[in-house]
Image (cartoon, rainbow, N blue to C red; front, side, top):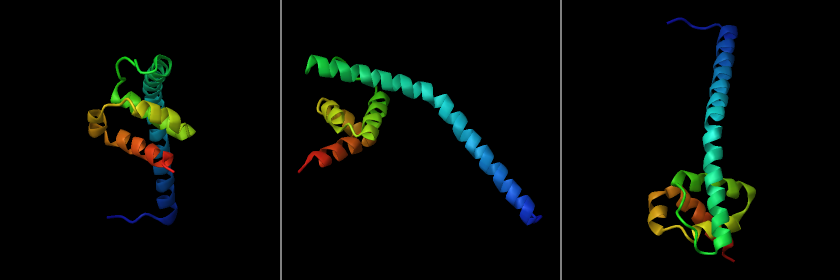
Length: 112
């Protein structure tokens, strides 16, 4: 086993860090269109729920729900999350632990 000199070890670490940053940037660029599509599905559903007041049609995919709820959480729009959560079936929340966590966190925030 050869030992690296301090300078070459530092260079190797820098190259590794650069490759990691590039990998993450490429992954983000690849996933962005899919996330935008899921967010559009969520927003379409949200608008239908808000305009129909109860007759919301079919639920979007769990992935779209999660992306939309995360986006509204990041904006601090807890009312929208609460509105959507109020019509989600308990079975869905049982199958989607991350959705359940967001919904519970919003409910906890709304309690006095």
